[in-house]
Image 1 (cartoon, one colour):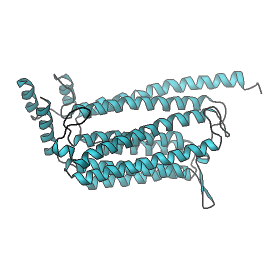
Image 2: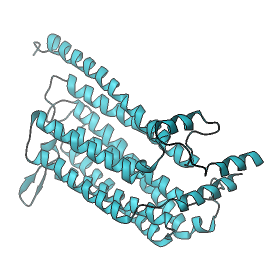
Image 3: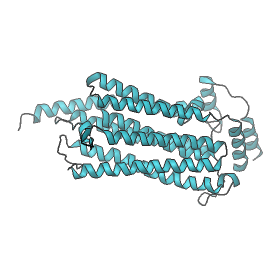
Image 4: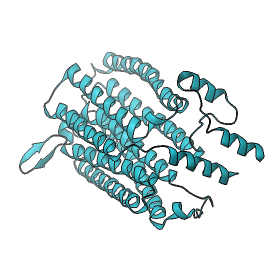
Length: 117
Length: 240
């Protein structure tokens, strides 16, 4: 049974056209440029919201390129794409919860411990 | 038996695309992920669970950094190196990032050559990936020993909030472990490719299953994930 399955899958795979090597080299180049850009954010000493938004932008672009092209997500069926990419979005809810919690902890520390030294 | 074979041949029929396809795949009998093998689906699900592990680490780091009343050490200065008399901020981390991205590039090419059944090039590309991965781990060991010699401990450091040390060792240590496991994984699969296991359908010593070149792609998924996690660590821990 497994034999039949793997043979069928291999045939499907062989029919499936592989993207050209050039695509990987282009993505590789873009990842280098984006990394250099995010390093430059630090090197130039940008601060505040400009720094944070640029860091997040370059991070999102790099992550998107790696997932879509290197991990072949762009060629997968939507059922797998949604099963893998949607659950991590829920982590943002956790982030929001912990931001509120961290603010509360910081406020408590400032109220009760700041005056002691 | 006969029924199983029938359904497998049936899969070559055109399935609906888009959201309708998602509904059709998930509501169909037998399996939801139609055109990928169980090995690849399981690797994706493992990576999803690993995403949550690293997500928890980064959220814990965010909570520690936001709630401390003592100033957070400036990573740009902590990870600076003096090269040729100049203090260059974050340079080691930048080099590590480029090394890891390059290893991802060679891995993607290994997968491509694997499906073209180019045994030699696939193995060489995988070995190159493993070498770059080992370089990354080596540089991380250097970074750790440098910080430890400067007095960084999980409970204290000379520059500010004590949580800096604990989150640093926890997050980079866990990531470094992933890279190390990935290097071992790559070497094992590269040996199989080099020996021609996937061409002669030799059975694995552990599972007794016949492998095919999809194993290279599954290894690649893990390796790209390690790179992906580094993208987030680089952004949130080193640059923020």
